[in-house]
Amino acid sequence: MTDQIVESLNNCQGKLHPAAHKIALSLLTWHSKRGVWTPKQRELAIKLIAEVADTEKKKTSMVADITPLISILASSNMVAPSLRIIKGGATYKLKLDKKDSSIEVIRDGDWAGQFTADGCYVPRKKADLAEVNRVFDDIMAVLIDPIGYARTYGALTGHCSFCAKPLTDPRSQTAGYGEICANRYRLAWG
Ligand SMILES: [Zn+2]
Image (cartoon, rainbow, N blue to C red):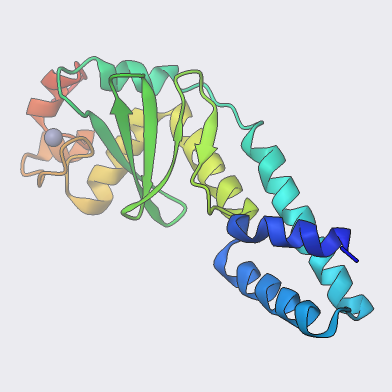
């Protein structure tokens, strides 16, 4: 006899974050050995399935206006123009793909997904709901004032928010980017 919940949980495996994946695995192992779950285990399995369903739903409904950021990054003739910012304790690198005008999101050095040209956030496959929400909210905040976040990045790190080189001139330290990048991206400086 096939149990619908067992089957659903089985299908969810690749979409759960590591901790939840471990739980799912132990539930499935238990079930395969004994052919039955306790009510508590069953409840837990349903919770995990619901979490995946929520994440999937969320993944298709997160849209942001990324045009201001695209227009800043696209104004340079760099091959892969990018902006570094710090938000919510994480360091983000937002990189424009000039081929399709999408924005790649790199969070603390790891690829976290991308915004398509029309602003749809497509998180990395393994992201759980908490991560999806966190990254989207962080980027939403940055999109309102990218240059303000550039300034903060420069102040916090002493490095250019565009090219990551050390900022030596006080005017660059105030702006959050150096004179060369100001010219590259057509931004006010000094
Ligand atoms: Zn620079």
